Length: 176
Image 1: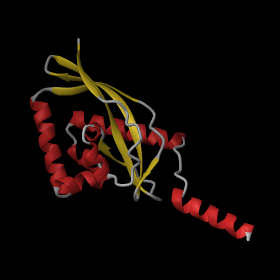
Image 2: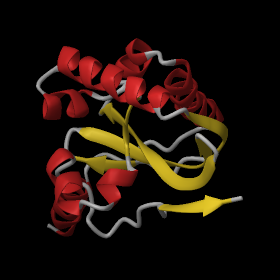
Image 3: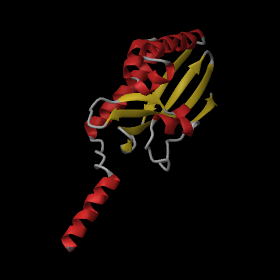
């Protein structure tokens, strides 16, 4: 009888907490940082296709599909080029631990960028959200800075994400 109760307790505990979330190994960390670096390089080069291919479908769905996202990205890149915007330097920190969010596993990749717009320079502290389907090895991304300002949207996009998780900081300030 005691063994049955113990088994029931163990089974309920496993059910409550779900499967353990796999943590990132060094290969994953390098991949995530390289992908975020490629996103920034693609932005500087005006490569909307690479940006679109590295972006998670959650962002596509919000804009009406992958092609609509690509078109919006192209237009944003054109506006950045007209404003003479360039990422001069980007520092990408190690990702956060992996968290469960419904059918997804997510992590946050903090970064600090030095951005030049014509003659002005800005330091932008932000993060990307790495997202993959549970059991999948392919990470895709969405910008986290805007989500940090709209937690309702974050919870809508990633239902099941623990609302007590501390997001990386975000800020923008002028620099000389």
